[in-house]
Image 1 (tube, rainbow, N blue to C red):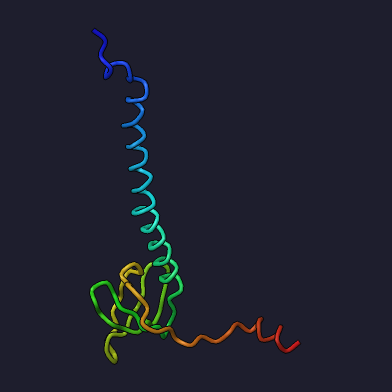
Image 2 (cartoon, rainbow, N blue to C red):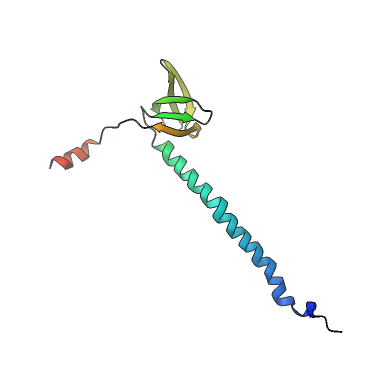
Length: 111
């Protein structure tokens, strides 16, 4: 006797693969892309740190940036108390210091 379930083998085997591909696509757009965007924004914020910026570390410590080098940030957490942190330990900038504009831009404005 002929069974109807056995005759649809070609299209039936494609459906699970399509569902798995769809699941990976949804995971990419819902989880991976937003995480990459947050990481790029954090790296941009950490690279823009400068003296005078008030920041919060990942541990919740508030401080003012005194100096910055390639890998570390020196913070003043109380008058005369300086601590050194890795750049990725800075969670967010509370307020940025007023920075002087580059001299080259001032020369262009005067002309």
